[in-house]
Image 1 (cartoon, rainbow, N blue to C red):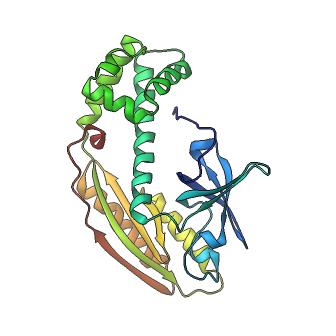
Image 2 (cartoon, rainbow, N blue to C red):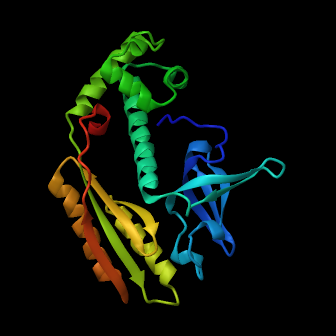
Image 3 (cartoon, helix red, strand yellow):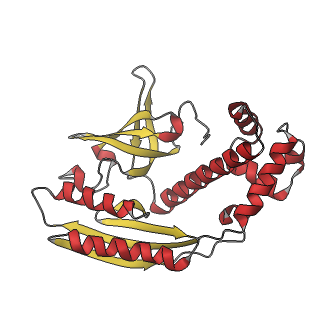
Length: 265
């Protein structure tokens, strides 16, 4: 999959971060949109409240949305904050990131179909003209003058429009639940929860951290019943595996998405 890789994030920017290592004073994270650039999440920037055990708030392998708050050019280090990002903005940022990933896949599909040999050069043209795959596909869907005047090869444009039309017909259903999950296991509770959340992700569900002890579970499928079934399987796994703790789950009301071609892909 061809994804745009940026150089360095700007202070104040919201970034997708994957937690790679947790220490006493904070966590090290990798930024997938910046060539897995390593940044640091200080413990004071994890939550607004007092933190006794940082692992009750974050865990290794977790994907979060952070704000870039400090950049030391001399030491070449970057600090980020989790607590400064409102849940709504974090959700929107992850949504746009996932959409860009899906459209990068659509781009690669069109490149393969059109039998373009130099896919890197093709991606370079697309991103120099449209900046993101989201903007490219949006212009293609609306057949804008910018898309018509693009230097992208004609056969690729035709392949992209065909792939776009094919994917438009595949309607996707999204269900979202808010989960409250907590363990009374004081000895190995963090390990227990990490393993549990890993099993939930293995069912095909996207798990995002809201704030201890709340998580958002998002299930997506071309069939609504199957999307709900994934949640039910995850629910059964948690009930079976959680020895002593609290588990509650409630369906989240999602705003009806506007009729947008990008939302149908």
